[in-house]
Image (cartoon, rainbow, N blue to C red; front, side):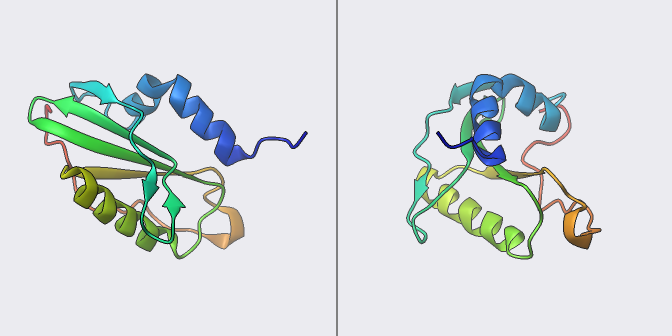
Length: 124
C-alpha cells in the first residue's frame, strides 16, 4: 500500500479541520461556511484544485481556494491566477487563492508574500 503524499494529507486535514485553516487566513472575519463540496474539476488541462470553500460573509458569498505545494516553483503564481479565473467564471464569485508552501525555502527560494487583492475589507 502506497504512503499518502504530503499533498493528500493536507487536503484531508483541510477537510476535517476547515475552521482552523480558515482562521489562519481570516482571523477576524465573520463568515459562514456554505459548502466545502464544490466541484474541484476545472476545464483547464483537466487540473484539479486542492480545496475550494464557499463562504457567506456580510457582503455576500465568496470562494476560498487552498493550494498545497511542497516547494515553490515559478509556475505557481500563473496556475493560481488561472484557477482563480476559472473558479470565478464557473461560480460567478470572487476568489481568494491561498498558497500553503510546505518547504518555502527549499531550492533557494527567498521570495516574499505577494497579495493579489483582498476579498475582505477591515471588519468583514
